[in-house]
Length: 194
Image 1: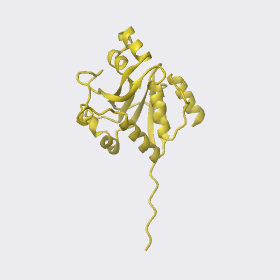
Image 2: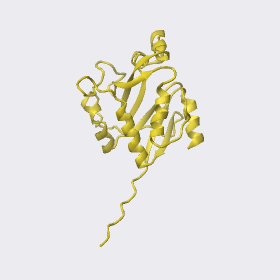
Image 3: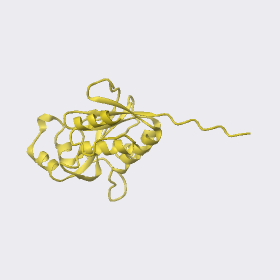
Image 4: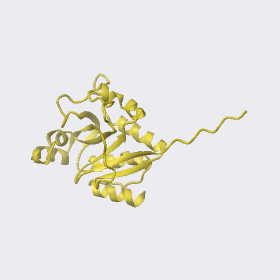
């Protein structure tokens, strides 16, 4: 009697979401993703929520992210903090259907191993509190479907949200430009190298 060969794990699809200055990574809200990010549910944003198809992650400047929910809220203080040195946060949002054909969305296919590595890299960038738990920052969100968590690292003009996204994509096995401060540069590098 011989053992059957294990079937290869299936590739996984993620979404890269962009606007003129920022990128986010959307992971499918599958049971394995919900389990890996269970601390988000325990820490203030329930991810196993009716209608959720995607969990969106973005890393960025605490002051800019928190104090600028809309372009109309843009003020000099958060911009200066983001360009110099600021603490960082992880923005997590739950989303339903996202049109993968929309101009601001890129669908990317990762190997099963690459997907696991990306999930772990994102998990590792959440900063634990003094008690070791990872909890949402109280009273800070844009809607009822998102939350901000303390994150590891310092945000500045050279180490920004898009360079974080590029680093996560490289963890997953994709090739990106070395320094991608703007979304369009990141998108071009992904299209060129992958």
